[in-house]
Image: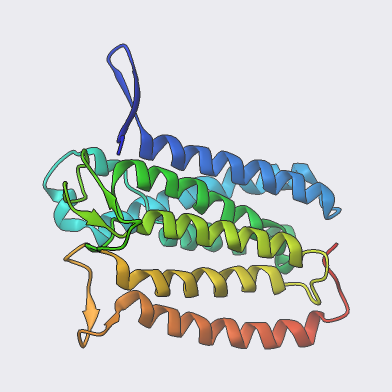
Length: 253
């Protein structure tokens, strides 16, 4: 595809970094819009973003390095600017929980407001994956297979599953579902838990179509991420039940 979006003088603008940044900005814009719609303080939202966004960036970078240690140690490359959404989510949630407690904010209400923004961030960021060729798919003979003529990651000249597009469309579908469900959510916490459930489920479905040979498998049939999904669904199920019982009288606007 086109890993280099454009150049300005001696400065190269990589497609991956551009679309990841665009995803963050789009998510922030949607989050601030929804805070107003939900009757929350946009200024409090800005304050949260100023603390949470750096934590998300640090978490995303650290997780990417840890899961790509061998490639990272080989030196600079277009993928040296890689990020991990799971790391970003972990870093953001860690700091968010501390801030919610310190400022005595309702965590479920704020996380519900943020849920659609998370799906939008991932969807836009996946355009960068598609342009760069990272997160590429396994070889396929299907008519929608994609061939990368220029990529630092994907094998060239081979038709591959467009897993980046699969992720993109999955997160657009999640975004749509969350925006529709906002009007009829039965309890506080439903939207963020629904996001986590749909996200990990879609990832586990798409994961076997990934083509990176170093991706770990368990007993040769289940990917590591699918094992994580099973654990995540169990946790979400418990939290869903508890939040529904505790917050059932409140509704998301």
